Every structure is written in structure tokens, then in C-alpha cells.
Length: 132
Image (cartoon, rainbow, N blue to C red):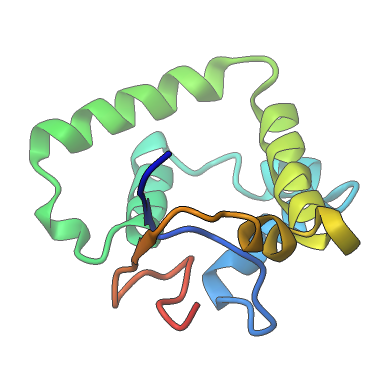
């Protein structure tokens, strides 16, 4: 690799972004089934709007067509028998990666990148702070 460009690379922060807290909570045993019960009446459209509000600086710029596709995908995923298990395992994977220590920590791994690297962050990113 001669050069590297990373778009909003997420490395552990001391000051966690507030919108990222639910991901960490989802990793706690028992929380996913509780959340599934509490949100069972949420429509795929409501869930999709929530995800877009979290992931896009300006969700209003998402086209109607793209939104319809995202809702259809959310509906498809909600029908999968392993949806909540996959969400829980993904959240646990993120928490595990963030809490590795020593030579395996993400910051230590980042230090080993020797290629000239450009980091690009969004000023309105709600999950990964530009302060990184």
C-alpha cells in the first residue's frame, strides 16, 4: 500500500459519541430481547428513519427512492429469524474491538500503518467524532 485514505475511521474514544451508546448497550446480555419487545410495534419505516437520522448529516437529502429501498431492506431483515442475534453479535464485536488492550488495541494497530494516510471526517457525524 503506497497511500491510504480512510473515511470516518472509528477508533476508541475516551468521550463516546452519545448516539453510539445504544450500540454498546445492545451488546449487554438480555438487552436485545428487551429492546425487541419494546420496539415490536415500530414500523420498518420508523426504524429506517431512525437509522438514517443516525447515519446521515442531513437525512432529508436521501431520495424518496433510496428511502423506499432502505425500508424494503429493513422489512426483509426484520423477517429473518436471526435478525436480533446478528445485531447483538455485531454490537459485541464492536465493543470487543474497542476494548482490546496492549498490542491488539485498535490504536496500537493504527500506529503500525506506515503508509501516508489521509483521514476524512464529517463535521456532523453523530457516530465518529471529527475530533479523532
